[in-house]
Length: 286
Image (tube, rainbow, N blue to C red):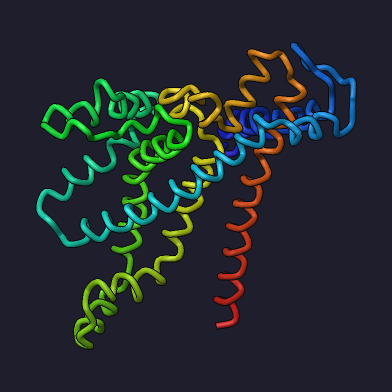
């Protein structure tokens, strides 16, 4: 009977994910415009995609955003996890504060950081009013720095959940490891960095995969902060897909871009399975 109860969920999952992905891939080989059709044009949409400056800039922005935001989230998330691991008072309150940004809508997060970086309302204005009149900090107004402003917003949103995952990994480390390190006189920072951190591969991999999937589908926070601008300085692949399917009525080109975005997701999933298979193989040999 339990299997019967899960049938609607299975059908929904298959319908929404598998069938939609298959049709997206099929339509990426057609010249579909406003409505999908089956007039196949081979790899023309992919050729046009990779000859488009807007798409290539979007991919470059995605790599910049991904590298800096993932590194930032992992480093600051681990530092916060170490801070929380000190058995501080009011731990529940601090955990709620750090996790609160992740619970917020990315649109709200983006709007908050847009105001923070507004030269007339945010950080720059506040510091100048304190007397430092030459202070300049408005990254979203420049094409050279706008992407880094978006990175800061992404880190603020994701660092809390990274902290929670890594804190769970820290709390799972055998207490005997800490006792042995203390008896050997190893400083706490070296224990956290060189002994405990390598033992948290599972938690680190989980946080890393979560961050990677979030980077590939980044859209809301960019729209809220910059609308992809100034110019196309913060354009992302997801924005390219949405614009071609809706504003430009070019479903074939949008589906080609969407299908290309699946490749890094597949690579991350394959990496996860490869690591799990390798770990299982080592356990069986032991």
